[in-house]
Length: 128
Image 1 (cartoon, one colour):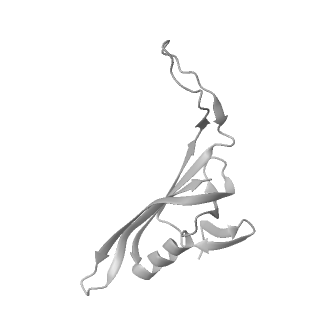
Image 2 (cartoon, helix red, strand yellow):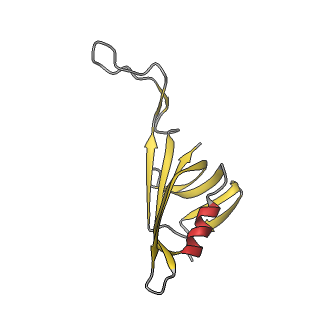
Image 3 (spheres, helix red, strand yellow):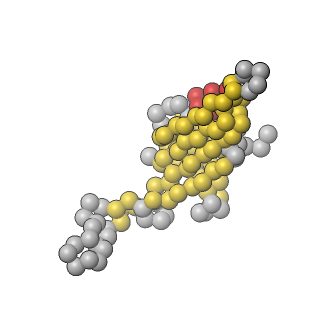
């Protein structure tokens, strides 16, 4: 199986994760506390971390998973912090960085024979 994601507790020892059905990457600048809009109406902005070092969020979504496969994925992303290696569309290259997981959502559905499966599993990995 070709993997699109690798995860681990060290950047040198990463394990492949089942490829998601969908992945989106968001880059967010980090502004200084002095950023704002004064009475003049013009934005005053002081960027602490801009495009080159901006914080990335990687949103992942899997569909129609057996319950056991969803459990493997959730446990792989269960540590407080971890290293994630993924293909970054902004650099067109592989990127490895430290992340944490937020907002896990899991939609459980039932098949006709009573077996549970996951209709959709999604969460966001936020760069530390």
